[in-house]
Each structure stands twice: as structure tokens, then as C-alpha cells.
Amino acid sequence: MMLRGEAATRTRWLAIALCALVGAIAATIVALGNPGHMGLCGACFLRDVAGALKLHQGPAILRPEVAGLALGALLWRLVSRQHVGRTGGHALVRLLLCAAMAVGALVFLGCPFRLLQRLGGGDPSAWLALPGFALGVRAAMALERRGWSIGKTSEAPLAQGLLAPLLLAAPLGLFLLGGVLAGPGPGDASAPAHAPWLAALALALGAGAILSATGFCAISGVRSAFGGPRWMLFATAAVVLGYGVMALLAGGSTFGAAIQPIAHGDWLWNTLALALVGACGALAGGCPVRQIVMAGEGNGDAFVGCCGLLLGGALAHTLGLASAPATAAAAGGPTEASRWAVALLLAAVFAYGVAALPRASASSPTKA
Image 1 (cartoon, rainbow, N blue to C red):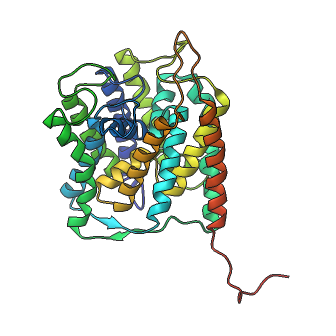
Image 2: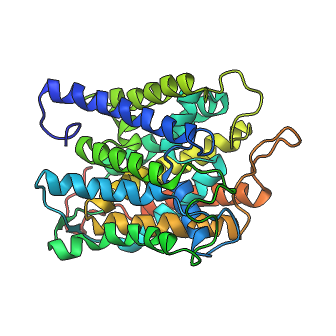
Image 3: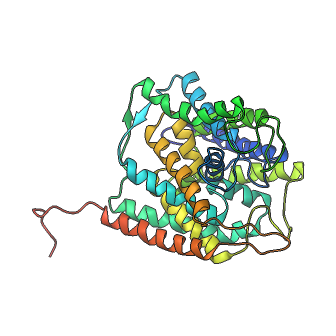
């Protein structure tokens, strides 16, 4: 991958330019009809898919971007003749961490990838809450230094590797059949807001291929700010810049707007929710968009993470944990239940993280 492992400096700069293109792609999808600053969002889109599958009573719409990201990643792996298919362990932990990450994202109203779009689009509430995201990632890194590991994957047969991308793309097939899923069907312009499905799918295919080729992840971008090579951090800035420039050109920038699209101004709970998202994403091995891309590459563990995100999104709306966006008539913000959920999940995640650290054996010598 261009941003991971060994790569020439020229390759790294090309990857950064491609990440800027991904930001521009996200802004283009918004310009075509998606909600503001939501061209690509793993947590929100999987929540919407869960609604389309009638798993909750919240937003219900098939987001073709999910299938596009997964299939774009798969096509890149096949074209570049890289192995498709990996699996490992700790499936239940991945599922629960990603479910908790979805809850945090829906309290903030966006996954880390949407955070980057809100930053580029001029949302001040995202900028104010950004330190919470960094703090969550940093706290997870402290656990990793003490021995935490979600486990490593190993190669699996191609037939097994194809299952994850095909399952993520399966709802698109139901969507095209018509009359099966909840929400607007092909050619239906009714709410929730969405770009034309074919354009969204095509643009997401390109984004998925780029994200697979580069290995980009918003969580990794923050990680690199705390040490090591800064290429992933530069790529993160490139996504923000690419989105911001295209949003400005397309009239989607919201700098100076009193009401930001699908956002609220509760600084404290935005910050704590992003801390939960950052910690869970770092411990689970990637942000929601990265989980979708890795699943598209045939990673069965990442597919379990996607299932956790879908489950968490469904529970967030079933249990009243998702925040309400601000409008001209109301300030919006988290519910009392969502505040308790974020606080308890933060405590539970770090309590489990500490409990799961490797212990020295009884026979190991101890220092005086």
C-alpha cells in the first residue's frame, strides 16, 4: 500500500494527491444530492442500510456508496494481482468495538471520514471537537504499547475472501430488484437526501480503489501525528483540503453558516463522542470507511466490524441514542440516553482494554 510499509517518496506524494482526489469525490457526491458534508460516511451509511433492511425505524435508504467502496477495493486487489482473502480472530471484540464506535459516531453525527468532510466544509463544531478524536486515539495507543492487540489476520482462500465484498454489495441487488427494501428506490428522489444511485456508485467505486491502493485511514492519520512517519497525516490533510476546495467550487461550503448540515453545537458531547470513536477505531483496527474497504479486500474480520457498525447504528436509533441535528427551530444535540451511553461505553471500552492486557506469568522474575 502506498502509504504503508516501504514505498518510494514519489509514491507517497502520489498517494497524498490521490487522497485529495477522494476528498473531491466526496464533495462531488454531496453536490449531486447527498446530505451536507456526507459524501462518504461509513457509520451513517451502514445505519441507513440497516434502516433499508428494516432493522430500525430511523433513516432508511440504500446507500450505493457502501457497495461502491467495497467493490472498488475488491477490483483494485484483483487488477493489481494482490491476494484477496484474510481472516483472524477476536471476532466478538471487533463486533462490539465497532458497535460502540457507531454509537459514538451517531452522537457526534458522523464517522471520522465525515469529520474530515465537516472540517473541510467549514463546520466549527467539528474543529472544536477534533481534540477529542485525537485524545481517544492516543489513549488507545497507550493500551497498545502495554500489549493490547486485536489480533493479526492470515491469508484465507479466495472463495472465503469474496464473501465479504459480495455480502456488502448484496443490498444493492435487493435495491435494484425494487419493492424489497425500505426507503426510496431507483429513480426516486424522495427523502432521505441522496445523489443519483448510479453516479454515487461509480464515484464510490473510484474512491474504494484509491483507498485500497493507498491504505488510507483517518485513524492512522491521527496516529501518525503522535510519532513515526507523517505521510498518513499529510494524506489526512489532503482529504480535508480536497473536500474543502471542491465544496467551495460546488457551492457546498458552509464557512460562517449559523446552522451546519446534520450537526449540533454541543461541544462537550461532540468531544466525548469523538473520543469514543477514536478509541474504538484504533483498538478495532480502522475507522468505519477503512473497515468497509478492508472488507472489500476480502478481510473477514473487517466484515465483522461492518456488521458491528450496522448493529450499533440500528441500536442507536432503536434506543434513542442518536443526536438530533440543529435546525432553525431547535438546537438539537444528544439525548439524555446518548450522554449516558457515551460515558458508559468509554468506561467499558477502557476497562476491557486494561483487563485484556497480557499479564506476566507467575514464574517471571520481578524487579525489586
